[in-house]
Amino acid sequence: MEIGNRIKSCRADVGMSQDDLAARIYVSRQTISSWENNKTYPDVQSLLLLSETFDVSVDSLIKGDVEAMTKTVDSDVRTMKRLGNVMLVFLILTALACGWFTFQVAVWDWPLEHAIPTIVIALVMWGISMFAAIWVDRIKKQHDLITYKEILSYWRGEPVDRDTERGRRERAIPSWMKTVRTIGWIIIALAVGAAFGFCVSGAIATLFG
Image (cartoon, rainbow, N blue to C red; front, side, top):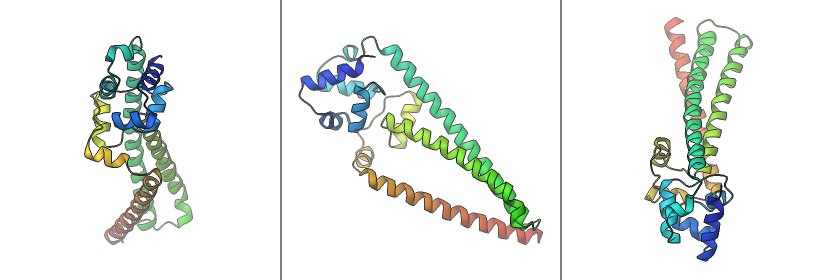
């Protein structure tokens, strides 16, 4: 693959840093670095912006690399779709396992230690779904996909428009703040899940008790 070298060479020719180019293309500096090291490849929209920025044709940027780029992008799209299905299936299985645990404890009045295998199964299912989610998140970061619209466009093989108000706002948020926000959402999700489980348990106990 030579596209990474071409991007790096063109950037040097116009005297731009990776940060400068990232601002012009509406991606992160890490994405520019990833392109230049041939770890990931620009999508159609980014290629158009690169050609405008460097005043060169798209053909000159991707010359000889089209087939390899297409295979890589198609592979990542297929992987995201499969992982999305895995995540959904195992989240449903996790919910079913939690419901079965509630039934065992609230309806059959099992001692908690007897229902431990069900808890373990639920945790394993949840762990698999989280592993799939982390894998998807890594692919999103590699291709600098932040908003739902960007992810959907990439999923459909359409040009990804990163020059949106929400996209610019999300990219301006520091990494540490995104981490804090993610942890906050996890805590909220756990609290909501616990409350839902408690309500379901009470309802089942009332119906069958």
